[in-house]
Length: 187
Image 1 (tube, one colour):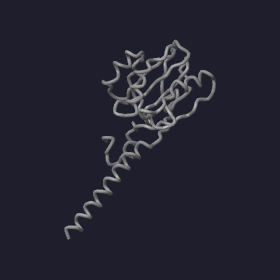
Image 2: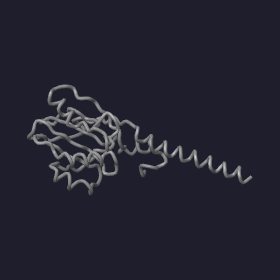
Image 3: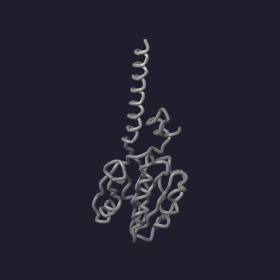
Image 4: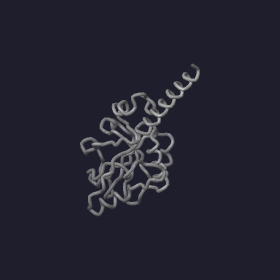
């Protein structure tokens, strides 16, 4: 009887842990389709020909990787580069500012952004030329970040590659759908 109870406990534990691990991994495989358009996002005219807005959230590991990458590479001369954090940002704001990035405060941006990290490239007049992810795959510490390559494609008047956002959900309805148990997102 004890052996049967032990095997039952081990089986329940094994399947419970397998479900939890698969669920947590599956959250990171979600692809977000951000529908950012000029009507949604008011971009001021800039003195340079092009600008880049990096939209991040401090709670997202992918966004943290992008923030650290931006701090290391510094703002690109001749390009108006801004970083917008959704929610509070205490960790990266000062370092990004020292690296030449303008820090923007988020207003009601979460209403049409599904996931981050999100890159927006726009022209001098504020017209969005690219809105999407930073790479072909999910952002990890070894991912080759393609923001500058995308900017060069736009400068050369070629259609930029369209990378999906593979990161963290910021829309509450998506967080609930992706994580009904509240393991990653505190609902």
